[in-house]
Image (tube, rainbow, N blue to C red; front, top):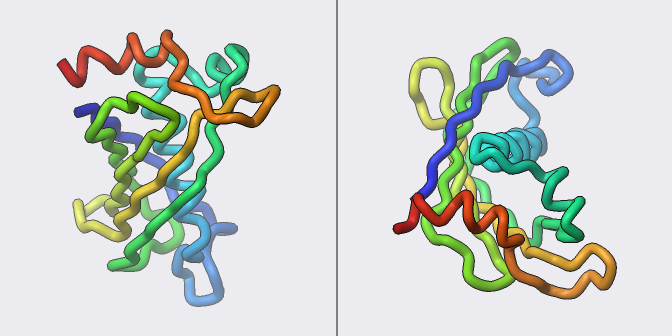
Length: 136
């Protein structure tokens, strides 16, 4: 299992008239968590795209539990429970406030696609090598 933690602060532009983070912004928080989780491995989305592989989101499930507000320090925990063996990768992501309260829980599924043909492919070997030790 691989786990990553990323922190970010809520910006004013991410809140609505009630000073609460607009629900659609959690998709962006999840994306930051995924990108940083891969970066913490010593690999990047940019590396993946350079190898000819892209990763579109194909599914996202979110449960909203508590609101985040302007200037809150958020922690995004990103978890990979399984090492992908085909074209599909599933991230479990939770967003916490600075008091450790769970605000939002999500699951995001992405596919590995060949950038040129848009056909399903497998995880780039260099990314697999970075993740493999967490699943031994």
